Amino acid sequence: MDDPRFYKHDDGCCFIKTSYHDGVLPAILGKLATARKAYKKEMMRFERLAFDAVVGSKERAEFEFMEKNFNARQLAAKAKRLTDYAHQVFKAFLFALRCQRVTRKAYSVSPS
Image 1 (cartoon, rainbow, N blue to C red):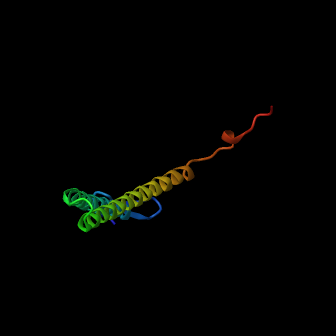
Image 2 (image 1 turned 90 degrees about the vertical axis):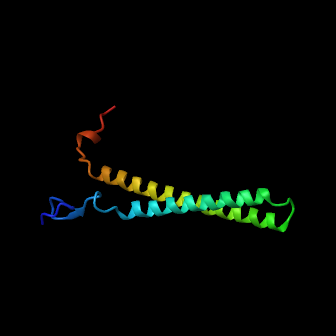
Image 3 (image 1 turned 180 degrees about the horizontal axis):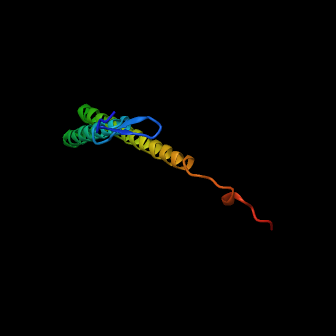
């Protein structure tokens, strides 16, 4: 197979290059970033509405509730995004550790 979109590994596996297709994780992180941006925009809108409403009115209480709701949503999207990213970095770190060659010399203990 001589398709330029793929990287052929020595043991016969093929991987698509990221210049042609993003992986699953970048797609998820992108969607979470877009959702968080939309939630923050709505949160700001309700914050402005609550600020402009009459103090003590039912309308102001509803706007404040919606502001808190969208704040919670954007914080959840942020936490999920950071968790997914940290999980991916941790997996890459473990893979890098697993791929290193270990020699006996590195683990020899000198007599005291």
